Length: 193
Image (cartoon, rainbow, N blue to C red; front, side, top):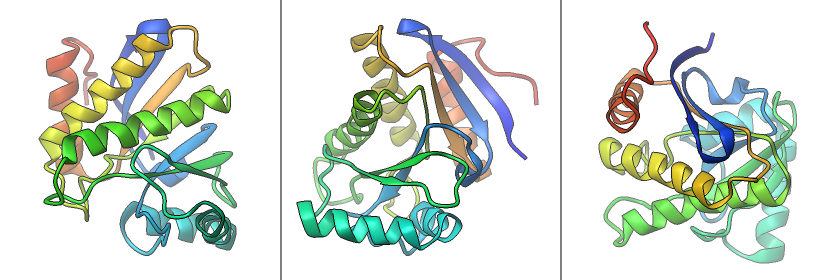
């Protein structure tokens, strides 16, 4: 069961929502998978997406890597969604904490996913907290960068196709950090629990 935690309207009349729920249950045009460069969806969000969506996601991911090579931070991959309620999966590669240049790589991964959604005329997109799980990126820093990237994308594309962007988080500690960043950035955006 999903719960709306906070909401604001960005440039171009795009609604940004913070949702406590399961990303794999989002009925949007696309969800963003926090992937690795080889698109091997074993653990974390990637594993959950591949298990719930079925074999087609891993099969198309393998085909993508065979054709184009490893996925870059600024060059996400797009696959079908299999049995997921969304239509597509955008596979974005965030940085592993400690590899260097993490802030820029995370921003590039989020912007790359938003730009790919825009290029495919998607109206709705849901993202996880990219890199803040098994990749070890600090949650507070990740929240700041991710939300800033979404706001910047909407500012740069006010007439774009995206009407709704969800940040959908399943675990309470990450949700609390993102909720605090959301409220600091957009005072009054939080909803009562």
